Image (cartoon, rainbow, N blue to C red; front, side):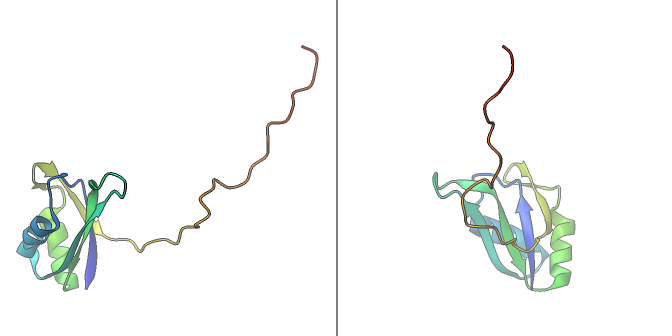
Length: 103
């Protein structure tokens, strides 16, 4: 199985319509649109998992730069999810300190 990143999706695109479109390239294992937790709206990108490497390559060739639901989409091989620290902070850093001198 091969996972593809699909960017530039219309807010009107559904997981079903995404799956249906990509079925033109072969067997779709899954189609997922990433949603914003706060608003519940699409973030404008998602992932499609194709059954084989060949079908994934065909899907990239067929859909990258093409229009879906009125928007030009980009399709590429998905990169592995990177581990992100769960600290929530912005890291350390020095403070400004008081300015000294003749004013």
